[in-house]
Structures are given as C-alpha cells and as structure tokens.
Amino acid sequence: ENGRVSADDKVPVSVKAWKMGGSRMFIQEGTKVSLSDLLEGVIVSSGNDASVALAEYIAGSESAFADIMNQQASLMGMTGTYYSNSTGWPDDDHVTTARDLAFLSRALINEYPLQYSIYANKYFKFNGIDQTNRNSLLWRDSSVDGLKTGHTEEAGYCLVASASRKGMRLISVVMGAKSKASRAQESQKLLAYGFRYYETNKIHSAGDVVKEGSTVWYGVVDKINLITPKDIYVTIPQGSKEELKSNIILSSAIEAPITETQELGRMSVALDDEILIDFPIFAENDVDEAGVLERLWDSLQMMFNGMME
Image 1 (cartoon, helix red, strand yellow):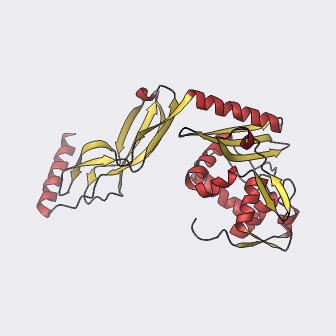
Image 2 (cartoon, one colour):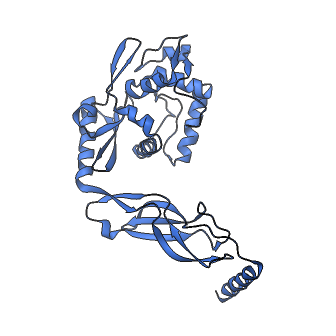
Image 3 (spheres, one colour):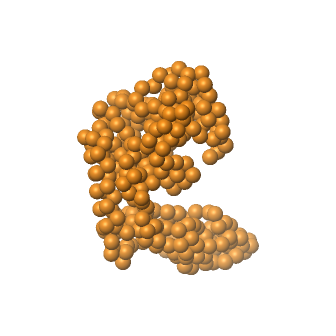
C-alpha cells in the first residue's frame, strides 16, 4: 500500500524458504517468484515456504518480519498475541487469542479489500501443481468469502471464517478443533447463530450533525456543529436499536482557528453500559480566528467562567 513493494516484484527464494515444512506452495530454491503469486500461495495454499520468502524480502529476515508483525499487533490492541515467526510454526513464545484473530481479520477486511478478495479463491495453480483452498466453507456456503485455516498438533484445527449477508458481515473464530470437519461445523454454527440473532444498523451517515451549537472561543463565530466523519455502523442483538445510548466528550474547549479535519472530541455508542464503538467527531466547517478585541473579550469570559467554577 505504501509503495515499498509491488505485486509484480520478483522475490528470490532462499534455502530456508525452500526447506520449510508443513503446507507449501512448492517454490524452488534459487528461483524468483512474483510477489502476487507468493501472496496467493500464502492465502490459498497456506504455503509456509511462501510466507518465509515474503518475510525475507520485505524485512530482510523472518525474525525481523516477526518484529514488524509484533509492532503492528501492538498498535491494533492485540494484547494476547506474540509472533516469533511468519508462518505460525509451533513455538512456545508464538501465541494469539480468538479475540485478537478477530481484530486482525476485521482490519484486513476493512483496510485491504483487494487483497481480501483472494481469500475467496477456491483453487491456486503454481508451477504445474493444482492446489485447493483448505477452507471448506467456501463450497458449503455462498455467503462465506474467507478467511483462513490453520493446523498444528499443539493448536489443533483452527479456522477464521467470514461471511456477508444482507449488508451484515460476521467473523467467526474456531480454535483447537479435533478435525477439519469439526472446525468447519463449529464455524457454521457460530455464523448461523450470529446471522439469526444479530443485526447491523447504520446509526449515522457521514456528515451527520451529532452535536449542535458547541461554543467556539476566539472565532469569527461563537457556535459550531460537530459531525461524524464517516458512516457509523453497530452490530447488536436484534430489536435492541432503541436501547442504544450515545455520549460525547470534547477533547477541550473549542478554540479557533478550526479546520474541518481537526478532531474536536469523541463519541461513543453503548448498549447496556457496554461501549460498542468509539469514534472521533469533527467541525462541520472551518472557523477563522477573530480579531484582537473579540479574542480579548473571549479571554475575559473564559477567565470569569473559570472563577465561577
């Protein structure tokens, strides 16, 4: 996304990548493979060899790539996750949680839709070898378009699945299943439960005014409306929309000059005292700074208000 690498880049295959065990896409030592093929090999074929080749190309070594993964996990709030390699190969220090996998999957779906579309591919052919996506739900349920399987003796059979029906997307995470069939069945149960008992509602459209007439200090106007920057959705138990409660907290006193891109506070939406979503709110329009006399008057007013408090 930032232009450091391209889908057309030719990635060299090291001895380490070639020797990787487990599931593979069967790349050969000393060859160069397009980054796009390696990405599809990781996604569809669960290729450990492709994963190592990509890690070495992007970060210089697999361990350095794992460091980057850990940095990103921390930024995303994945507090139960630590990566020691790029493949998920068993290691005492390599851990994650169902919650963290759901967070990661949501970020992938929302921020990288082009790459996410690859997860729906049922087949992948490389070097004359036909390989099949291990996510059997792609054949069972047309609403499923991802996401990723995994298996080790230590972790059991795992599956992060995602499906979209009538504008609502759900993500399920199953870990530690006893078999491939079991992980698929449990995933289907979770998705069926979610679609039956939950609903997704758009509670605000981009540009909606969520707070009218907020006081502006030192500006050419003394009031401004606060708006949402984008469409806001929440997924809640069916029939509970009327029970949602919103709360707005301003970052501080609103002082001019103000731009439309300036975050002025945050709004949260809760159900039964549990915060479902928290997002920034912005000024509806720019506000220029007032003249000297007007600013002086506002300063006196603020001082007086502070004394009264």
